[in-house]
Length: 249
Image (cartoon, rainbow, N blue to C red):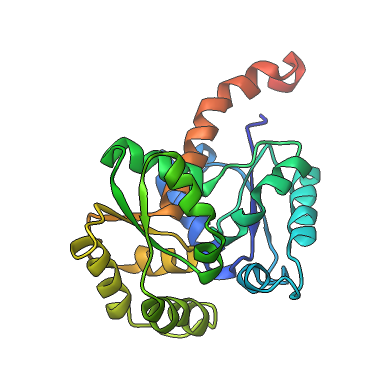
């Protein structure tokens, strides 16, 4: 029986993709293997670095490769697509234009979640790559929802957030989350952020591994996984109805 198949544009980065798949599986109400969501994953770590291009357009542009992976996922049978990389959403609009199936938006889904829980006019901290921060894309979504975005100081971004992402997680090296959590705590307590977004899927790896998760942290990857499950459950019946009778026998 055909069900909506989730296509995952992965490899950006590779470890975050594996964590995302695990997150989707854990969130799926299942009593047996067959209750889980079918997925097609293209874990392509050869896609050029998103932050490097956003900060310097002379660097290789990842968009053509992102579009190729989307086309491959569609050809392989994906009915909807998720991109477990916040920074890649800088390219979201052209990706959607090139796609023929729905592409979920990690930033829009996260902002919608925060709006439901914290309400408008709230201050929201953003922990993300410098590419995401400098592009202003996440801040634009927050602003459209009447939410105030607060980012780390330059020192925190350059000496804590980016080294954790690029010098530890992306290199598959051990890491200490202490300083990262201190930046999040400062945004919450000193900057008045009711919510702090874990807005990089490498940082989501850190979040998912925490024994105790501060209540003010909202993990964007966690939100995207929830939406993937919701989409599947909302559309499963539709896909069954659209099948020819012979396919249901």
